[in-house]
Image 1 (cartoon, rainbow, N blue to C red):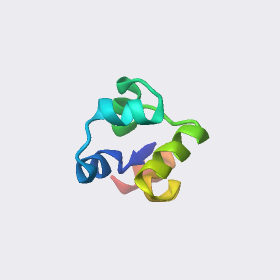
Image 2 (cartoon, rainbow, N blue to C red; image 1 turned 180 degrees about the vertical axis):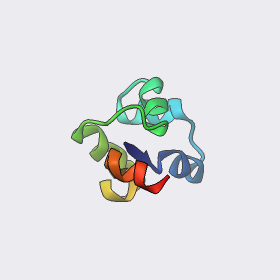
Image 3 (cartoon, rainbow, N blue to C red; image 1 turned 30 degrees about the vertical axis):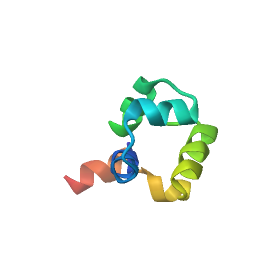
Image 4 (spheres, rainbow, N blue to C red; image 1 turned 90 degrees about the horizontal axis):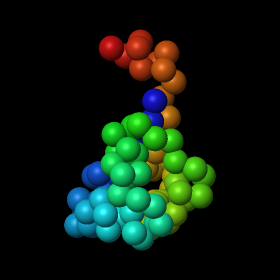
Length: 73
């Protein structure tokens, strides 16, 4: 399971999903799916997003083991 801070960081920069998508060279739907945890980014995409926001990949993306997620519920 993927958790991201993309939505939060976008709001801080006052940009929408389409603008971020254009900046990092993907479709808006890719950003939507990233924000909803339905898509795992390639390393290049994760690096491009992190670079844009001036953060590390780890600051933006958190991968949670499915078993850990069930244990937390």
